[in-house]
Length: 289
Ligand SMILES: C[S@@+](CC[C@H](N)C(=O)[O-])C[C@H]1O[C@@H](n2cnc3c(N)ncnc32)[C@H](O)[C@@H]1O
Figure 1 (tube, rainbow, N blue to C red):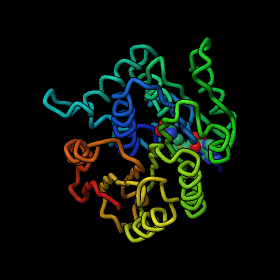
Figure 2: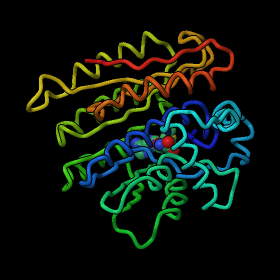
Figure 3: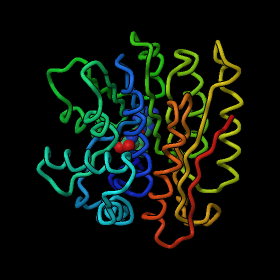
């Protein structure tokens, strides 16, 4: 069966991923020079939280809906920025039930000097995404292709700055974890300073830990440093060894922008506070090198 993100749109993992993505884009925007945003597994860009698939799982009720209803004026900028972006996109789409995926969040945040490429393998999802993109702009591209394969086409890029989001479905968990390792190495071989953000599911903590170590140990050595800096941000809402399925959400970031880990250490506990309603989870930001 083909993976359909509509069943999961707006869940706690999406919220964690999208707050992080937006903060990374803002961090890269601190320099005037443009960058390329490469989203290797883009999805359809926009989801309807009242669509049958979404209503059936009701995952957004325990994700974005909780965050919106708990919203406070004294929250960290990164969470407020995300909620403001969500509101602006809903206004633009004239729909309060719309939930933006990574492409629409990225489009709302990139500047005229930046470019974005969104790759999606399913024709149906790609078609929806393609229709959402600005028509006149050659700096935003949607491709119906294999995101892993297209890395070598798009990198290295002329700007020599890039943010690569790798967000596969992990339907075949072992294959996707392995493919992500290869893709991260490929990105860094082509552009050693690229910021790479990899989303990963936390099902069993031991497996996740092994994978993180393996990935880090296989990365190519950067030309001027001993190793590529790496951090992870993890949020789990069930004990990391329970049999629920998806216990937690992880973001592994290679070449993290300056001080992003310190900012994460402020916003992540707030996401946990709101999303971990049963108080069985946790949150941690780690340096991996
Ligand atoms: C988790 S969803 C992406 C969600 C999206 N990044 C977001 O945050 O809104 C994963 C997507 O990857 C697509 N996909 C699966 N294998 C792929 C591949 N090899 N290349 C590109 N897209 C792929 C799936 O069809 C699905 O839409």
